[in-house]
Image 1 (spheres, rainbow, N blue to C red):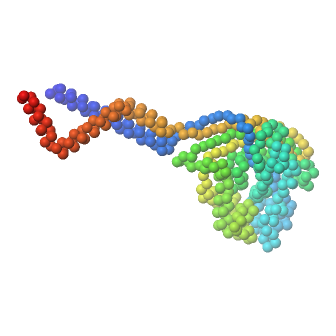
Image 2 (image 1 turned 90 degrees about the vertical axis):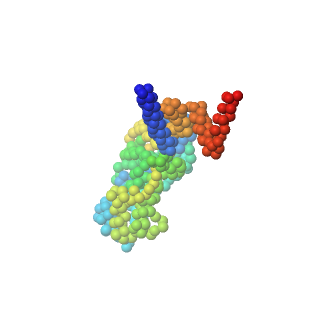
Image 3 (image 1 turned 135 degrees about the horizontal axis):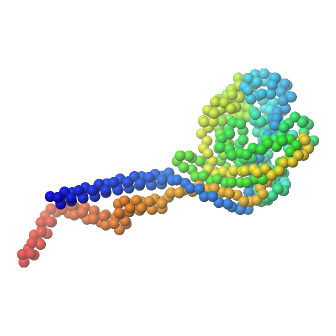
Length: 395
């Protein structure tokens, strides 16, 4: 009797342990397949010596940005045009908003006398845009890759003392960023720009270091892997389209070629309120639905020297001292090979299964199924076999 109880307890413990191991194995397998569906990533960091490098784009904005002495001509009593109520006195029947911005902001030759990249002016492409807070800004971008390093090369910007007829300025805002990024007051999201301020009468030299980051898209955070994509450009275009379409017209800092120019205080009040820092702008930014960029170049400026020059001049040189870049790559840290290794480890350790053991279990299961099938089809087969064996024993 005691032996039967011990045997039952032994069987019960074996079954219990088997069930526990099966449960733990299923839990681990669920985690493994979850990692395969949404794999974790690891980061590889390396240094490279490139034969050529792309310089970043450089955006420059004058400070102060406007010729405020001309504001009275257009009906303004003060220069705070970022306030919507200021636009109530603008002479809409006499002047256009575009004409106002073109006259009261500074042209490129009023900010820069010489602009070159690698000692050549034809290596640069210059574009401009209007901003409600920074006036007219200019973006300088390289047309080709650079193969020269050192303080003689790179960007060189210079304003000669006799190139401007006013002393009423403090300096130049300089923003260093990727070429396809758009830098405005509306879209300060996902832009890795570096800001410098070059005071009037200063000559500044800046050494650049570049780092590349390659991220992988995943289920939690999507990203665009195209080199030409820019989240800031996507946001800028989306916000401009939403605001201008809502108002039904466009202004220089919220352009939309499909719509006419705004020409009333009601329209300007709505556009200024929605395009400057406010809860309305934040709500509009959320509607843009632009995903992040997977691949980025981040430029770090290192100030090398500042020296005084003529009081009403300024100069800036931005250059790579070498062709060394650092690169950080995200790679998938879990694939099918890792999954197979985890499966083998979990099943082998918890259930004692191996390839040969699994084959043996499958063969036993198939043999039992076949035996039951034969018994179900020919129930007399077992009796005939028994009878034959008995006859042999009698002989």
